[in-house]
Image (tube, rainbow, N blue to C red; front, side):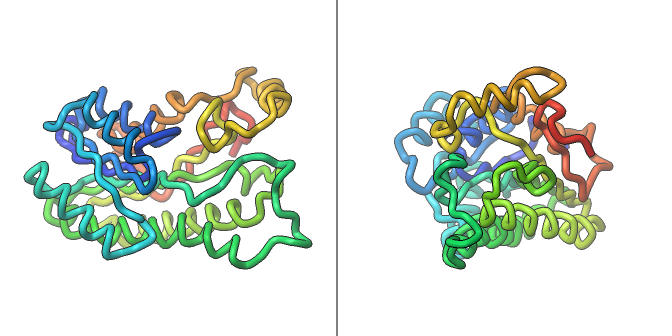
Length: 254
């Protein structure tokens, strides 16, 4: 299915990386659902820029399966067809500031639980809600947003990293389970991005250190990352599933 024919749900799409992903899909002609939980003003402003025929801003807590089901139904009614493509981007409350991290000696299970809910539970909820429509089309694209930290844990964000590693496992089991329906599941993993709301608290010297450590000599931007997400939704990736593409300027090499 061409990008222009796809209806794409981007969770956490109102700001930060999610906004860049929405803009990338919109530029290629896809119709987009800009999901938000707390960023109503940003999501509706972005939807207004794109226009009602090709964008819908819709609130839902993606950790709640009932709200996700309602979100997918609203999208189906608005666009007259079901969602074909899901980008699980929403991030449970988290700030990328290594100086403020919870260390191994003090981190609580509640912190782990919040991140697992925001990554794994939310990804499962959106996938299950979108599956009937994907099976109807015999086409689906599930794209999960990961991190390079579980391959290069330079900062011990224990809860965040563990949740994203679990999401990669879910990505691969979904790829195996759903492949016969022509539904692919892949992950795009980044490092620190310059700059999103989540990375705004990162000290400038950290950005400089990362840039100096990459072969490209710079920190990846949200727009560059979003372009890689487009690849997995595009016809060029039609035979790619169960993969984790690291987009960080070459800092981590598989």
